[in-house]
Image (cartoon, rainbow, N blue to C red):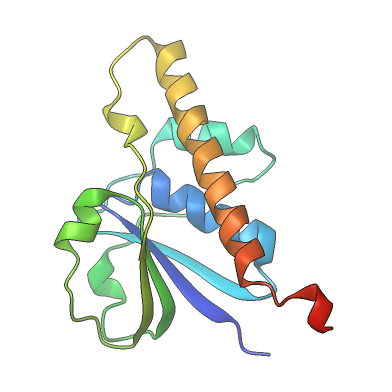
Length: 147
């Protein structure tokens, strides 16, 4: 069975798209090949790594990638933007793309507060992403009544 490739895209590929990639791989790695990229990639945020570790998902081997590394080179069944900026600035013409979806999540890296407040913001966004990925995976599953 060929896996459907999914690309999660955000501005910097440092938190939201990385978390979405890891959750999809964890929940449905047998059906989907998860990837992530950024319009302007930066290092993965340390708090993103920390809050994912709390879920038992290790993203230490993941790294930031640029959208240009994939455009026109890899076919994706789905491109899912996870921030408004990526949705607005991603080229509308994307060779080899099946479906385009948009899930808007606040950037936890832009949150201003104490270290504990920042950590809590990353947890909040992580939990929203986890739920959205799980709901999407569940919605893609064939109707069990048809089996």
